[in-house]
Image 1 (cartoon, rainbow, N blue to C red):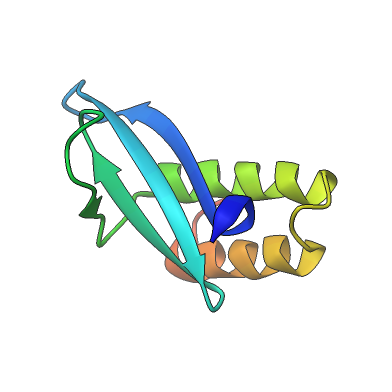
Image 2: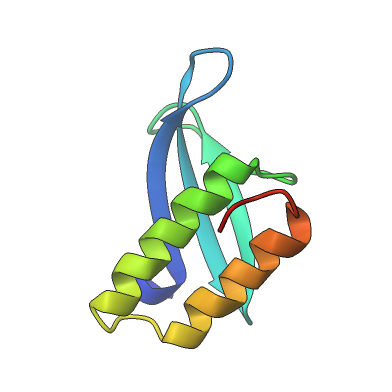
Length: 90
């Protein structure tokens, strides 16, 4: 998989708990996973919030600039976000 297909970040949930999130791409479909502590098991995140999608989009944009991903990858992800969150300003 490598650098191109896995992207991770940290965020605080609504409950104030710090979580690690990572997204993995397979066949143009992004899957999200979350855990609270370093040695916890990664749990699938079935309905990632808009915040996580936007964080992923930001990371994908940076990778496009560094030529690690293609501009099509960014556009495909942007369309996915708009489909899931029509109110989002992307």
